[in-house]
Image (cartoon, rainbow, N blue to C red):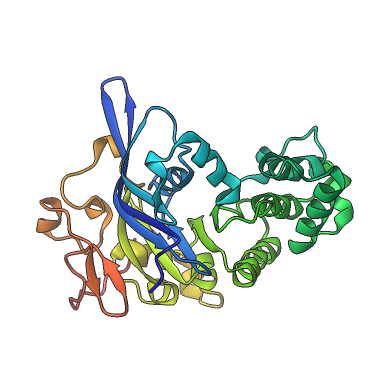
Length: 330
């Protein structure tokens, strides 16, 4: 078997503020291979974006990162600055959420996409860069003429496509997409996700996509990793995790997606009360225990390990495999 394109081993991220230590990510293992789309799911505050920031060492100075982040076998966390600079854009790139805030309003699209190209390929002429920018725009479904426009002249979906074009500018092997369809209507969201999926299959790159919407990841991804309170609680094939989750938190995320035509789902939508715990004040034992409808006394005493189950699945729950009493999530 070929080695993964990206391999994260026992990664932890702790933010330090004065005398306080806040563990935002705890003991995470994750892999992404070429031609594979891996989804990272969970509510806001579960550590998804913090984990993604370690891939290109973008975390703030106050963050302490432990473990290993291997990109094509080389540890990003110990990489020299020159090698890290080469890795960014040319090896791996990020599509940030909120294209409206990521694009410079006073520069044309051609300049913003072309900047990464000229930085990594300074020998190219202006004409060659312009041709490359046009090719990238066509690759994400935009006409070449859009290169001369300013961001305010584009719709939300078009801006997001520009962000994807920028991420592809230097032919990276890995794309990290952090909530790439935030604030887009459902039709445009479907178009953007279709573009991403097509590019991964066509170019053979790997992709890690972050979202709180498990239904989106279920349709788009090969595998899904579910995080809660900075820790992986379930991972496995996308269809299995979305359709038959093992961990109650993954089940809650799946149940929160309304079922079209089901009156019960319309008038009594499923979900969970409350929010994920503050990383600075994690409860003892299983972090999900205070919100879990199937909690046991032992859940407040010990953290369940992430264990293997059939079908290439992992889950961290004491009650996986039990005939749990049917309980409707609040």
